[in-house]
Image (cartoon, rainbow over all chains, first blue to last red):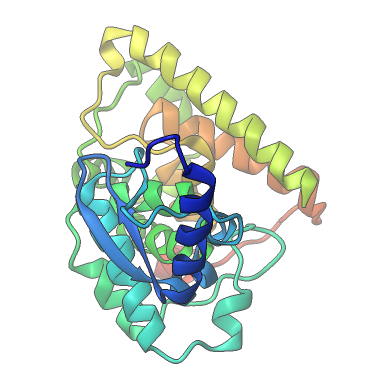
Length: 186
Length: 95
């Protein structure tokens, strides 16, 4: 940590040093450090891009207090894998806004990337992607979760996601009657 | 766009509001990882309508996301009401 005396100067030196580095160091809520390509971080995360442009990246580890180490490790892993894959124009322009830009199917490596995650890790990664403004990663993780719901009855979905049915019998009956056509397989 | 940001902020707020209500009710205790409502809406928006309807009836917080999504889709898309609908996920039993 810097002391106040001479801080301005230290700040300047730090900024210059930072500009030369091609990675940024991120710190999870539980204090673990991760290195990620600056180019990939800026390209994939609007929040990190803003921090890099604004000079608020800390060489000793930029604090991301909202993100646990497992989720951050996955974020960094995704960024690094993305940096190594050839970015297509379609990928960069893809957007999460559900009725403006059409969703681009995940690429093979992205599919594999989310397939290996546990439910908890996947949900944590969704929240981390959302927090960091990583639209593509949010798309890919949300797509995976939607895939897990497809072709299943409400009971099967509850089982997959470990969700308790919080409806009363009456409420459930009402929904079932209203939407009877969708429940042919129950 | 600014508009969609505002919409998202509103849904997020509603999501939190909803969760605080369900948290107060002992029957609503769920061990499932809880995602903010705007994310649930993103996920639901990727589903075909039959899957969407079934997912929307899983629990009350998912239903809230489903209801918001339908309301947004109607006001934003301004699409013609769908009279006939077919999809792969309904299979042979589709009318």
